[in-house]
Length: 475
Image 1 (cartoon, one colour):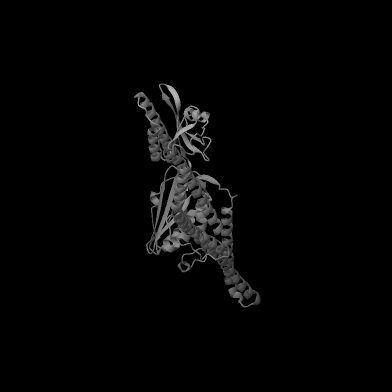
Image 2 (tube, one colour; image 1 turned 135 degrees about the vertical axis):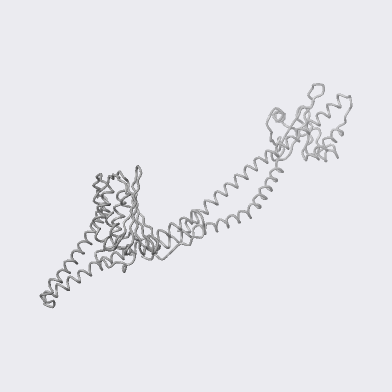
């Protein structure tokens, strides 16, 4: 998988780079070739104009310029501009050539050559730059021509040409230089890209390996977070997901273990006492006592089963809330009054009840009562002797917020994220109450969530524990 990703990424980047460099080279070649052609044509045009003017001015001044004088000018211009210059008669026959051979022998390979007069007229009339072989070159040449006139009479033509092979060879050299100069950056770029791709795919590869390990039940793998970008955020999210799955797996195992333990212990007790009564091990005068214990254990089993059924119903998508409007303050006071005896036994001071505001809530009254009851029950259970329980309620147009706080040993910070999980008990030694099933806070969270609210817990060890939930007023 990593190789496929690497090949795809590398191939895509390589194609982009190749086409980009090719496009740049094409544009550079086109622009430079146009520039070079314009320069060539300008030189050829000036050469033609200079020779034509030289001949015409000599005639205007009644000076008899010899062929050698004209050749001298032509040869110098041809040498400086590195081009071929010819003078033809009116029919296009070359009479004077600017090459060195013609200056030595008054004759060269071009002497007497017939240039098609139509080609010359086409060069003169064509406003665009012309490339032609003129009928005797083996390869195309840049070509310019101009009429030689004396007293407004056409006496011949001056033609200047330059081979495009030089421009082609120059463009080849430029291309070679461009390619050679691009090789080193390309090598460095592809090396850097390989390293970047490896670093990019390494966390993904580790995630893939960790995912396969999780599929086997191993949740110990974590992804090292070594970068502060999207991949780093993905690694953090993956680790958080792994932690959640690991915790979920622990909860699942703990749930099974707790259910097994919670069911096994009372069942063993019940079975032992029943066997003792049947086989006569327990004397008749003690049977009623032990039947009372059996009765209590059966009630505890019943409560546990009822709690799990309640959770199942609450988590069901088909479960519907039975909403009605009721006074939230009245409900809180009702719960506290029902626990008055327990509060007095522990000498707990209650504060905040007299300042609770009257607020009407549209929610499932029975379920919200259960939430408040569980929170008050926990506050009483874990408050220290002579401690305090504080109540606070505030609301706005949309939400009601209820807070209950009790003094006591508190909950360790490391345990706070897990207090709402099923069968989770911060410290089993803190409560000897056998009625506790470890499902109360999970049910509370489920009910609040079902209403579209949120619940949270805060605590400072040896000081206080506070639960706070927010509930929509009109569910």
